[in-house]
Length: 212
Image (tube, rainbow, N blue to C red; front, side, top):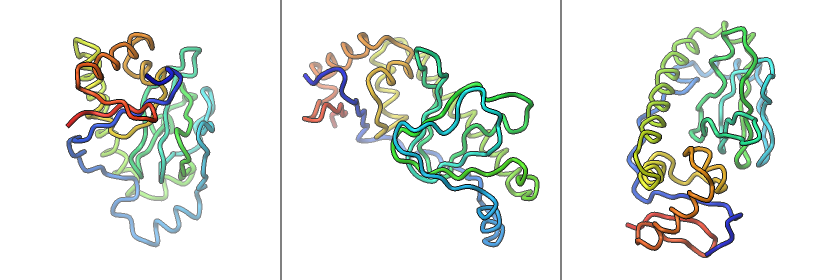
């Protein structure tokens, strides 16, 4: 088997279709979108580059345009709180509207482009308020899906549920262990058991994939 330090790709070959996502610019007129983007910052982050730090003052609504972002608690264990991978999905939006500093950090999981909309301009675009309400409801659904995952009785069930919810997300072994709430050695043992049992295959790059 490959070295345990290798990156672990978990791929679900037959993941269910994701529900249609509302995005922040839906139903906005082209001239409104152009005005909004002109007053915002579009920035590309390299893999592992920090987008914002824990304890930063919220200044922007962050919108993923391309790539993938992980939000983590910035402790020694570096627990992953959520993964943003859908284009036009937002993150850190809740903290724009309360008088609190950001309680977590975010970094690019691969080369990623993010639209950073200043808080000061959001009130000029009423459609954004409606879209945010819908998106917050969708995020509540996503959290319920993670709760569903964490309530699985066995680690194997958690791994299979993760594969269905997060196809093609690239994580290091310790990051996946953190996301699932298990130890890294326990995760590695179970992944290799699943290979032995014919549920997963391990390719020449050290990536785990489901067996059809």
